[in-house]
Image 1 (cartoon, rainbow, N blue to C red):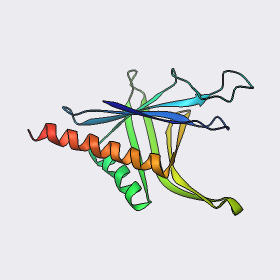
Image 2: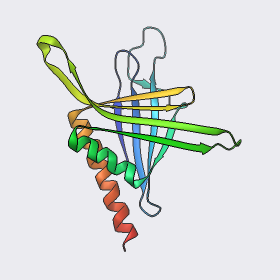
Image 3: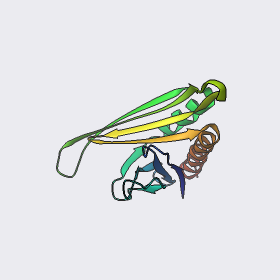
Length: 151
């Protein structure tokens, strides 16, 4: 099962995130694709489908996402592994609530996800509603994983 959130912006610093899981092995995956422009004048919602970051979350990390949305808080992840060439690879991620004061327009509230690996950085912005959907998606994944584990 998979679900996508597209977070494009005019600064071309957005991203798309696809969340999927495998109930039988208990893994939750994120596939993140950075936003790109096809040319200088292109401000449309294009994503670099060839330059993705894949992150495998633990069940506790998925629960941390749920907790962060529930409390308006933050969670951080640190992953270290060896690639197919034996080179150490470090991936860090931060998911946090933010408020930006826009003066007369009021406050802008939401969540931001930043994932860094080597020379790649991907950022996904979430409105409060899309963050809630992201949380519910992780809750659903965990529920299906638990159902599969305890059958």
